[in-house]
Length: 395
Image (cartoon, rainbow, N blue to C red; front, side, top):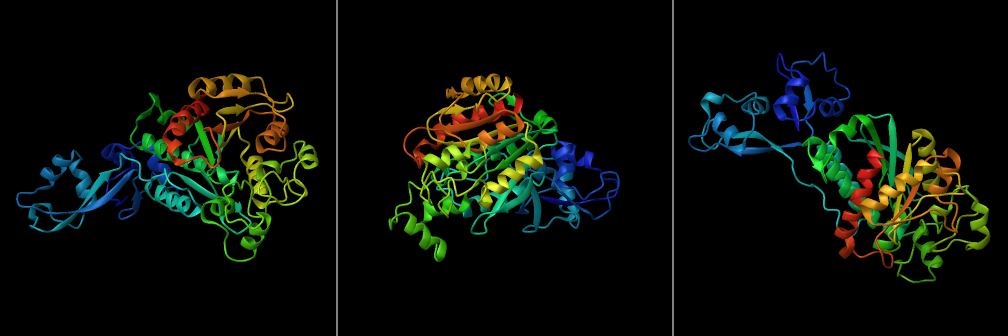
């Protein structure tokens, strides 16, 4: 929601008037100097929407504000051209509305189009949410990274490395919405106060690593060369529910130089619906973008969300730091998932991260059953994952 600066206004005053943390207002207006506001300047207030209201008989600004339990000055701020002593029946004014509910519905088939729409909605309502395109998919779709917070400790979450694991993107986006709600409304999640983390932690999120593959699973092959090739790889079948790879038939979580040659020797030797590690490491633009992001951000810890199995993989070749075990034990406690240190699988994003930086990395396998997991599991999976998201902030 936008307001216009009046003489004498300050961001501190707006924070108190709208009951929104000052730092969120400052970060929602990065081009604004807090000490040099100009009359008429637009200021974004996060967590609010505005709506029109038609004046009824007997209405006054005081009555309207009292009925809605808002500060009367919010009405003056939003209606600077209105004479409050001469309100007319049927006249339209603008009223602020605090958003206290999720604005996106993640419990649906979660395509790239749905993700993009949700990102736009969240960015508009919560302008302190930073958004950066870190690369493009094979078909040119944006690979977006989101950042929340100001802390020097950067933690990372990502989803949909595998196409038919798209439910991980939906789970991440629901928690993102809940996290933003808790920040602007100064609320807790499971009794954990969220606002202190804003200054302590920066959360980096790539909600959908493989958008082309996700759309292939959900919508079928696209028109053109890529769709034709995907059909050929899939032996002519229009059923892509078992497809894990990107649109070129490369498994993005088998693309990293962490014993990649072991995977290459025992996995498919050409593009396939799953498990083909590529002809070399880091050939695919999605995998390259994620590798470059890790180097740029220098994550303190990394969580890659996959499905399925209700387990958490946390080791690689004994190179993980001792604190990884403490962290994974907490993840296990809050989710009920089983920690597994070693598994005969390599070349994953988590493996490479641990190998290169010797920092805690985790592959979290959400839910149980056969991929793609049904949306009937969504609420159960979300409750299991919720504790892991929270614990990653404080561990």
